[in-house]
Image (cartoon, rainbow over all chains, first blue to last red):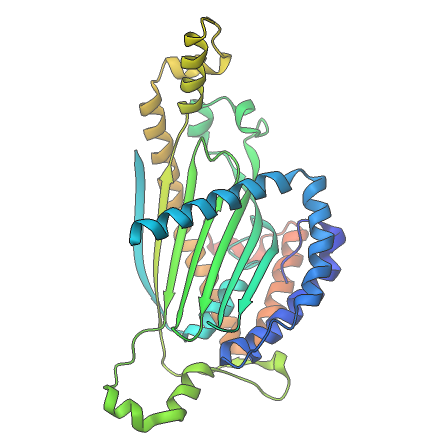
Length: 81
Length: 279
């Protein structure tokens, strides 16, 4: 599995990634999935990661980029109509 | 001023396998510059059966010496020898019902200097069989389309069947430099307000002219893009081959070996790859 940006999150990331791969290949790809079963593990991983992103000052940069994207997406949708 | 590059390719692997390989493409022997990959958001919509994922990659890169000549290194946060790290934000949407995966990656920092947006659209080719025949194939055909990855008891033993299926991919890269624009604006504002102060950063721009500088930076970016594309493709193929050979377990084993090699600072498997392989 790929490494996390934050070494302290590697363990919980690995647990989430394993869950995701199993769900993705066994359910999602077969079109039989009714929900994202790995969400509880993702929440744990996210908790660890968001702390790491904040410590490194990446959280603000990410927020801005994602807001830009949303605006662009909205723009894109409008121009299609 | 925008530079645009686009290419089409066909993978000789079924669509579901290609989407899985996309998520598992780092690390591979051609990606030793990728330091980390984190999932920062994920959403599954059971209604549409679409999966949206946002990931953050950290890549090590070497500033092209040509850029170092154009812009002071201190301004780019690079060390004296040009080593720098770049965060890449990747968004992907997989629609398994309609058979497509749309991905977009972009750099997070220095987007003013050069913004690089890479887009890849993977598609399951439309079936060559006429509709009437398809109806008779019924559920079997549908199951085949969804079930190219079969399982030998354990889920982790998933294997890709060589069904002769292919996946089409269209890749494009858009390079756009805004360098000098903010400083120009700032300067105009300062002149308007009666201030004669000129930021020091303007020094190297004066000799170039903003548009020439932008054009040159976009050109350098394009050269690097053209050079890194084959490696990105080879990386995907290594992952797909591992999947065909040993299923998911084979991919994970390969990843573990690559990760150990990266940690040990040995680029054992990279001998055949080009030395400057940042995406």
